[in-house]
Image (cartoon, rainbow, N blue to C red; front, side, top):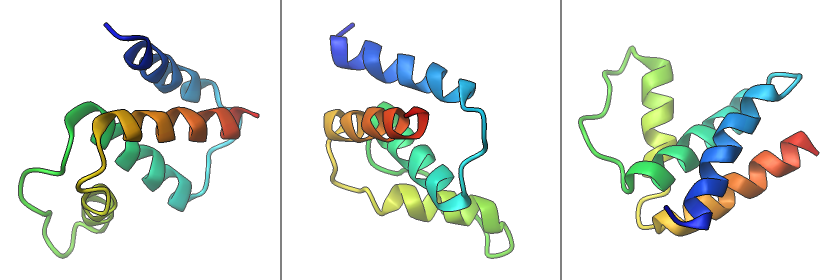
Amino acid sequence: MTDLRREFEQAAEDIQQLGQRPDNDTLLKLYALYKQGSEGDVHGEQPGFFDFVGTAKYEAWAHLRGVSEDEAMHRYIELVQDLLG
């Protein structure tokens, strides 16, 4: 396992210790960066129109299409560090 992957996984654990829930936009960024960093480009079918949360998550992840997994991991780690301050 690479150092970057270890830092990424540690950041995913650390974010659970956040005292206050981030706003929805930040949660979507965290979700999308985590998915892009762990799985790569978005895959699967887009959720149905009435699945608002699922659609928002899918679209946030799809917006990162083409971003490398390493870049997404770096961005995720930075965002987590900023939130934990």
